[in-house]
Image 1: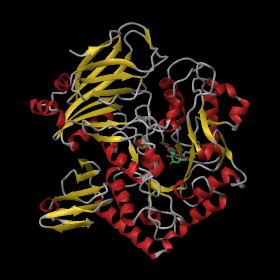
Image 2 (image 1 turned 135 degrees about the horizontal axis):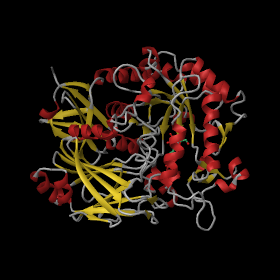
Image 3 (image 1 turned 90 degrees about the vertical axis):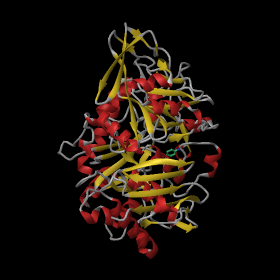
Image 4 (image 1 turned 180 degrees about the vertical axis):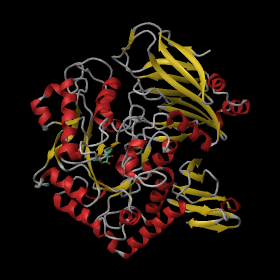
Length: 607
Ligand code: 9PG
């Protein structure tokens, strides 16, 4: 028997070989806690509902064999497989927690916490619980490592449910192997057909949107001149985008990131940096044949921005009437706040902002960043729950699928709560920023799980690959080819590029126009594109072999890769790694293969 909050009743049925659990309100009720308990039960009970085999149940019952596939709240949060004793603690620097922690109370030492879905893994068997309640309150799954089971909670403070209303819908399934588990995800979300509106970003088979973004080279230090140089240089032969996109006639994005605006919360051109204004910028990009893209953090405000000056009542506030802290960023004068989305004026202001950005300026690939702020606890003046306002306001903004002139528009979510976003942002950043360095020392010390660093970024790309092409078109962030302003070694750059290509979809690039004039950069780029071409046409799955060591296999078994993110060589029996090498950074000795640290080796089975 599952343990259920008496305000809700459970309906269980079967759909496409999965158990469907629907929870409805028994009577009218209002929710007044940040996190509300919904239901709980022992592992075996959930396994029974999912019809997991007895073998799996026995295997999972052995604590040392259990693994958990967890998913953090938003784009930058950790996601991946954890053993029974592994734990990703919240940063001890409170201001960094904004960039990864969700609304749930942190897991205690003896529990795993996962949003949106949770996977329980033993051997090849995978038991998944997945929330599928579009527009509903987001869920958290808590697994108790002592073996007591799973508890499910939801976040709906301020919501009211009428008798019979659907509160949550959970799909529960058991599958043998990663390929089958991913297919089950696909089945759950397929009927929504939310990828269709992204079709214009691709051509041919698999949707691999791509192009340029200004962030990972110039950062906020952009200007009309710099952007014009990169814009002109992007078509020059030899760089990743000209070779893989422009030269092959594929649609290509050119996206201007943070730094164009007066300040965060004041979304007009900084005329000191962009004297010709935003319309000229958008038109210039379109005239060169690219899809003009722009970054905004629409729900954030910084202290000196016009909204704070003119409409201080729009800021989300706490019970004492103080602005709710939404994070800290040295690029934006420190602490920042956010808007109260429950206010109709705020909603109209946001819609008017995007009317200008899309219709007047001509940008039609919009990267909406720092969306997690919509879920911060606070007193919403219009009443209701955070998720309801996010659903309505973000839903309205992203419902613009084309400009009035008929050109298609795409929306990319970033720093976004995943469960509440998939229908609005089929294109989604699924990890921390890549950054042109393997690690970010001080932020690692601060235990900032969403720190911009190639290592943290790779973990998420691998850890969220089950969502790629099923729930989202995963954006793993940028691939670097350049040598200037880059502390990644060629092997690390290759590792990032190939893991992104196999386990995610979008390929973005931030290098400057003159980089490819360096012969070694040109050669590196050509090698990467050649590897893309050999890897194309297959679907890949990741599995964790050991801490920071991952195996990647094509669904047909023909291609096998080993990604070693660890600091040491990793050895495997040699006979398991035969075939033609697509890339290899390994030594063979006495029947073993030693894979170098921070590298990927990929083998294709001889036909
Ligand atoms: C613009 C950037 C880029 C980037 C986004 C986001 O946790 N952090 O400290 C943290 C810092 C920056 C950041 C994300 C997290 O970057 O992901 O692509 O658009 O904003 O300011």
